[in-house]
Length: 438
Image (cartoon, rainbow, N blue to C red; front, side, top):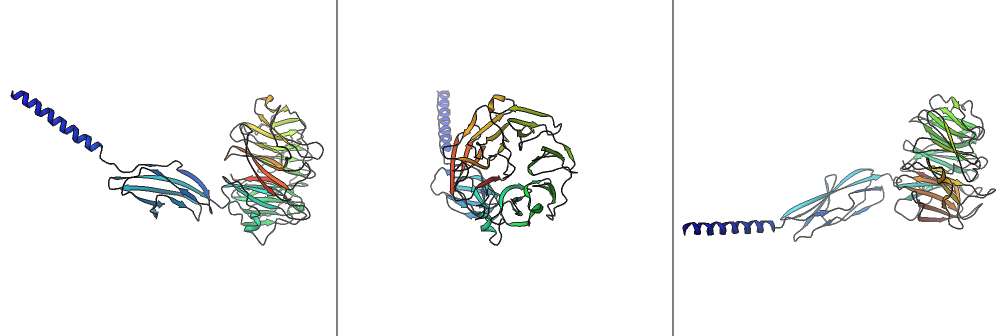
């Protein structure tokens, strides 16, 4: 009997302990936070509203800090930075039962860091060139940004064309051809930091940065070295004759497109001419595989960046020389895949409407157009640029085969060729090229 009583008491104690544990498990443990997009990038002047999800408990309080400095006590927080940098933003939700926290990492770029520039030639004889800007995620362009930031300065005169630009070492270098200047600005603020009037004797066409202090100017009569610290231009490089357009650097070689010799390869240190591998019609872009691509008539050509060995394949169209009314090359290369994109020129003096893609190693890939523009659109200026930030092809068009005042920027999926969106801006602007942030 005593043993039976002991068993009953033991079972009762176990039941009480289990009940206590069950009550402990049901005790509130405080709020839980979920953040859907913890890492974001914006530019100075932009803002981002941070709206974390959390379980709602009675008596809940909130706390926000930016780099450990208190900034708010609401359930959401709008972050609008005044300076560039990397910011850690912490959200804490608390009750008497406990607390939870989550972090946001926000990278803040310069005013013009979160998007790309559109360089417009200008209306020859009437209006100078201009710089527009597109911010990622928006459906518009911001017009006349260079003029807005530098109201007392101009990009040459009405008889010059803003034709080429590139970003090198934190600076935007813009070349205004037909007697115009070389203009240098900060790449993220557009504030002008220097210029060379009448660059290369009025024959400036293109620019290539080599390192922190050296660059090259492609001109109507050859190539000139430029000191990037002083913007002093040296004597014309020996052995290069005729107009020189696009140039790319790979290792210690510079590959320059020249109207007389096609591809000219220079030593990037001594500027000595190393070789003239083939009579390029247009060029050049660097593929993901490192090869330098251009075209010779109806052949898509490539050169190995160190051995200079050549390769070629047949295209279903012929390239047309850009010299005369020079514009930047109508080619671009993916940095994600071994894909080269090239625009088919129109007939006669008209602009083209078809873009082809070559997948390295697959000769048949270039047999059919990858993109055909919608009716009443023609490629203009360089026409196409690959954006590694979005894996898109950024295409510039106008509404005429020879001229037009309706300008469009179209965004195509670089993998499928599908059109994602189109932005339109009207006026006689003539988009020369887009310039992407690195």
